[in-house]
Image: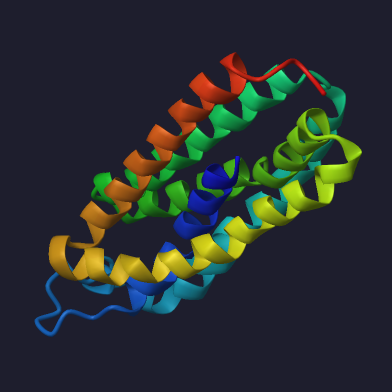
Length: 193
């Protein structure tokens, strides 16, 4: 769960580092703003509003859903599937060569990432006894800051391989983590504590 949360925050913050990097030749392969010049005026909307508004709106769905589903295995499956889905949105943001697809990918990321916290904390409730829930929550919360910090590595990836390759690699890594969640969390955990 912590790895999924880490990738969530790393993918969420990637746009800031990738947008800030300006290749000296302003080559669209390496410079997001050269590939999508409209980002110069719409960056604030895409970096925050396009992700945060769906995140908040779908959070009102994700929280009650996490409350209604009480099985740890079902919660883990939903957590894993939305992790895979938001990682596909990240991958698609780099793969598809259209600004609208980039924007839609960003909105899908927000909507799907809103499931991360409610289901992560619900799984802690399922799988950890009362005397270790605080520690488990601390470990899960550390992913926010570790993932945000690791997002600065996107500059290195962008410098060497281009911004699209960076987004695609983030997406693939998130999909792999999501698939591991499907295998490990839904098959090898006891139903509930």
